[in-house]
Amino acid sequence: MIGNILVGLVALIHCYIVYLEMVLWDRPRGRKAFGLTPEFASASKVLAAN
Image (tube, rainbow, N blue to C red; front, top):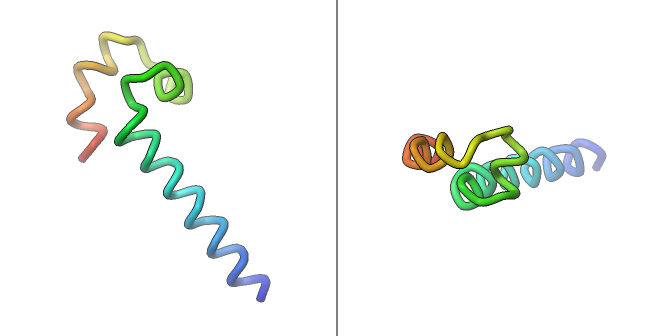
């Protein structure tokens, strides 16, 4: 039971990070999470979505 809960928690964290990288990369929340400048975020958006 505890193992299933931990696996679910890890899966949720993974989904959140994927969402940050693919959707929010060049938006203020994503830039703040990864410490990016707007210029770098725009230039590397394609690489982050890979």
